[in-house]
Image (cartoon, rainbow, N blue to C red; front, side, top):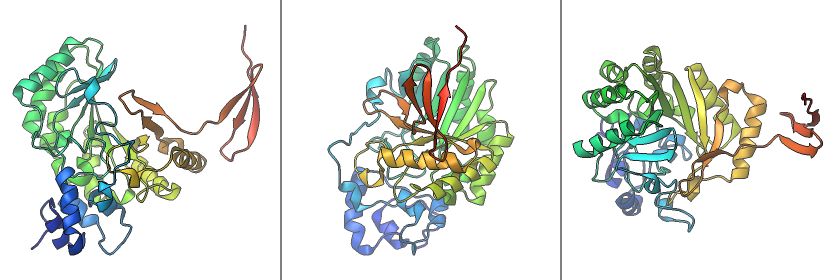
Length: 351
């Protein structure tokens, strides 16, 4: 059976495509019973099944390790539910809301922090729930930014996206609409003239691309991103720090440099969330800080994302990068340079 032009969703399909052993079908079927599986044709084409440490396979091919759940891991690791005033809205910060239009994605990352809810039979907001969510945004004047997420909002039809964007455009206190998506990487053909037309409104619209390894950035992906940027949408990126995928300086350096060359600004480097069955992906915070410190000494500031932790329980993202400054007293600080050498800095301010 030819699997090259279809999304792989079952253990049997993964085995037929050569991505898992036939002997693993039973274990992977159990994993798929808890956490959705989908590998798009574009991602399948980038996987080398002969490479034991292929970074694309590590992100999307399910593993029996996912049944190992640490006691610290949570169903809702970043506390979406406790900050959801109406379905589809997460209001954690005063000036912005997360707008979850859909619960489905073209691929399912094995480390996803929403893996308990994405890929379920509840695909997204029905008409009534969508109206309640839009009314919530409209009735809260402090909301300046809407972050459209899911699932992946770029899998919606352009017609539906256009209707939603038209409604957001008419909300006077709203200044920015930001989309979080993996589509330009995992299904680049979706980025077409109709999608671009749907996104164009008379407000600032940003697109944040989720990508974790330079091998994801195929020619088709680069073209899709160029279409968005050339159409006037600034692009940023977010990356998850993943053991076995990108948790070394050379890999991150290659990714961030390539993104900047594509006119995409690295925005966030996420420490792995405490999602169930993902402990094999997580580094320690100390390892992450060491990597970020190493990158600071090697690559342009344009290539530097902010290393962040989403505090479990819904308390928000905080920077957790290395500290270069320590207070010595009486206006004197010790400052480390990129090579780890300490220097004294004396404050001088007018009274």
